[in-house]
Image 1 (spheres, rainbow, N blue to C red):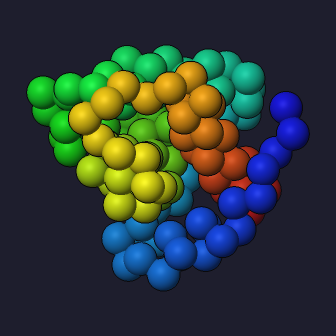
Image 2: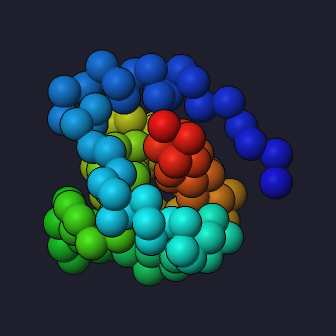
Length: 120
C-alpha cells in the first residue's frame, strides 16, 4: 500500500501539548517488533472498525485506553481516539458510520505514526 504524506497533519499534532506527549515505550516497541507491522495493522483495523466506526458510540471519548497496546497510544497521538477528535482534527463528522475509505485513512494515519516511532 502506498503511504500517504501526512506531514502537515503530524506538524499540527506536534504543536498540541497533549498529542505531542505520546510516544512508544520500550514495551510497546518490543510488541511491534515481535508481532510485526502487518499484525499491528490488523489490530488497528479491528479497533477502528469496532470502537470508532459505528455512528453511535455509547462511551465516545472514553473508548480508547491510554495504554495497553501500541495502537491505543498511536490513536491518542494522532487524534483518532474518538469521534470528537476525528471531527476536530480530521474533519470526519461524528454521528454517521465511518466508510471503508475513512476507516482505511484512520488506520493509515495510526500506522504511519507507529512506523515513524519505530524509526526513532
